Length: 483
Image 1 (cartoon, rainbow, N blue to C red):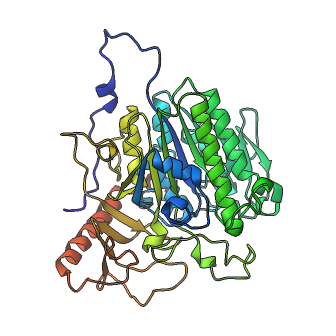
Image 2 (cartoon, one colour):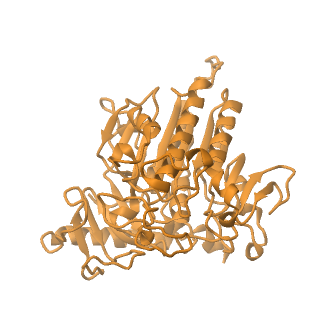
Image 3 (cartoon, rainbow, N blue to C red):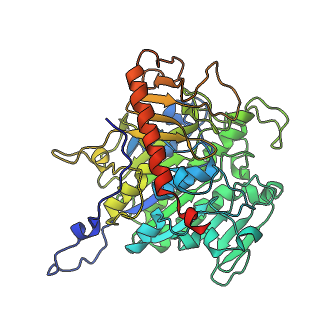
């Protein structure tokens, strides 16, 4: 099957879901709430349900048991900004115009205001929206004239408390939306500065996000709501509150993971407490794999990190890599009212699929003036006789320049360049003239290059990759019109 990067149709999904004009208006809005948990740098093997023997994550296991556990769940980029861009827009990082997989606090660019985010779509049909945790899609600074469009309220969120960037930046800030505030720009209030050296503030991040989410749920229990819960941990440096220090058999990484698990549990309990758990879609994932670059270093800015980095097991490499360990992460989707739970689903999906799927369920029309790269995966979540068929999995692995390094179709993965922060090529070389081909459902660790055996598959996948690159260049980005 050829790789297709489709423009969505102009059919308004909302119109298909509206009641007839003479029908009485229901007293209760039955549209589902949405909670999106997004951890930072957490590997596939950091969880009990994926086989970790000494990290306890019972609440995440319960979430898995109430929903669908995706054993092949992907992010588009192995680094922060680009991964989050795709999650919120359903579009590949190359469409962002940012030029890099990470933007720092002093970078001029930010997520362009013409992008339509998951929050904006849900807000347009009456959802209350909030972000609790890390943003990392822009910061106000002199280069962008302290633009109000750099921070979350400009992108569909009604409220926010969290960090502008990863908490390990020397200038990282904890910021809260505040209509009366004016720091760093109007509409916000800086709560803490210099987070890496501000130990107590850094140790409070997980609990702070959890409490804010719980308060938001209680405040909006009678309205449909969307909460994007973007925990800072377990990104280095690791910080954990006093209540969880020394609790895990797995050292500080285990302590951090078990505090995150407890936070997930507290939020799930709040959903149940206010009576909305059954009708809440909960999505759980990580922005990329573990930062294995630091797994063999005893002297770093974070200290001795040899036992502080998580696991991409059984996949190769990790964060900053276009091998499987950088892009393949834990993925769970639960909706007790509609989705049959306790399923392990082997069909591959990605974060690109979140926007089309949630928009379909909530009655939000997809935009027609841009390419949406994800698929609606409701046929996979809620299969029924004669339902729509799911498109074949066609996926690009983007590297530091937000351009593809590899492509996957079905069970096959083709590398045209090797990307890894570890600078380890594992004995391989890859180029457009001599690409690597792996059957990643047989060969989880990408060990056996079968390009010579399947030359026609190589030719076809290369053609599809090049077709995407032509389409991307032709369509351009929203930033192109600004220059």
